[in-house]
Image (cartoon, rainbow, N blue to C red; front, side, top):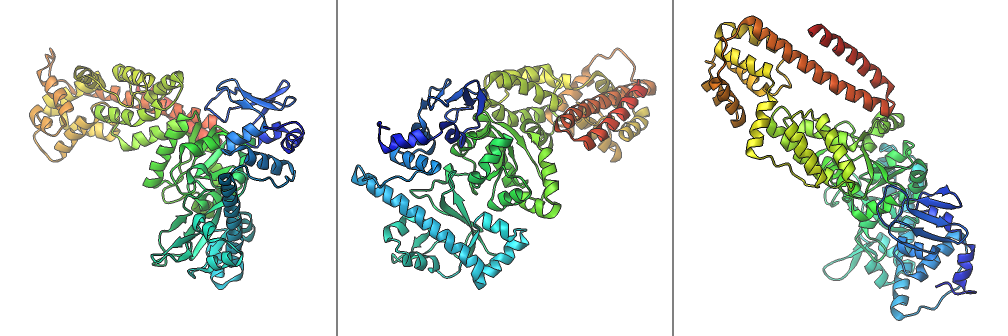
Length: 597
């Protein structure tokens, strides 16, 4: 492509492939070469190398390779002429005008050039409207209320689209915009009679740029809650220069910080992104108000494979977080999740709590597995076997998307520990499902019965027998059990809770009446106990208290395991204040456990 003596050859001779590739890939010196994670396929161990002397790159994993022009063509998805222009721009070489090779190429080039120019003119118009008009003053007041100062407004190129239906259209026509370019730009719409009018009206405008910094689209937020203003947020439609699935908002500003810190913070909206940026988080990007796409994940993967997801904590944000985790895990990312308090988002949190508080929260972000385990604990009843299976089936699709078989097995074991799943059959089925990349656990009926019986420890089973068979001591034992919450977290918590409820209502407590209050799995256990050959008396107060003590020890041991896990996480996060509290809690539990023996 770059023939000796040609202008392309001269550009290639002046270009430094290490610096140019370094704009897309985080490179490290290794011997005489530079290495990094390949931008053309997912990987965790660098197999992508750049040779500074020979001015070539090669991936020993997927086989991609070539010179600086080939690299830019692959990364930017452009033909050679456009790659030549991009490389020349990066190194400051002015290219002579080149005659197009075909009429189609000439037309496409003219169209892209005119569309980029239109968007630059539109950005200047919106900025002017914000700064020098009466409507713009109202928009500036809104932005000030959102914590944006003049420096931030200028840095992000924020502007304002006036309410008049054709203000931008008239300006662009004054600047000799062609009807064809206007129609293709996405900046104007066409009415029923074929007339053109501004797409964006009475909106605060956020320019959207490519990774190289060219403005190719806009996002507009309706000013206030005025009726008739349309949706709260409106984005540019797809165009010859803009594909929303291939652009991350603020990446052109953030990419250097992302590479330097080797992780990115991913948020949802423009204001969330700007809010985090003003809090000193320079490595923040946003998904442009759309669900994260595989192309956006690949784009991010050019700079890092570590990401903190910080979406809104509402139902829509939680769903978006879970969808994003799937995509990121499939492409080998290491993911953490920052869950802010309910009712806040990154923008409002920074305004209410301050920049330092947000940065502290960022340090406390949790590994995605811990985040999902907490979601499972809150959404499913982990005291029942059905709840445990449902929780694992919620988590398995995320494990199935992890490429490494070894990592899937490791995380399956960790999930079982986090969810306090002791039953060997369930743990084994979870391990097998994770290795086979299945998204569901299926226990055979006979296995389910074994698991359900195993969930109830001997002390719990014996205490239930005593409560059913010896009404004389029932009231005393129930009071002691409730005061100590000894039944909480056990395999028979639901059963004991039903007994307590019946006692408070002064209902007759027998195997039959209790079974009527329980789901099928617990009914089976009650009837099994009723028919069990006990070979012993109805039980004494001393024996019942011994069962209670064993249940209390089991409860303390479970709490101690959970605290120990939290201590390890606090140590990894270097959260000293939480660590002190957890160590004190561990000491208290250890003492209580020792006294109970």
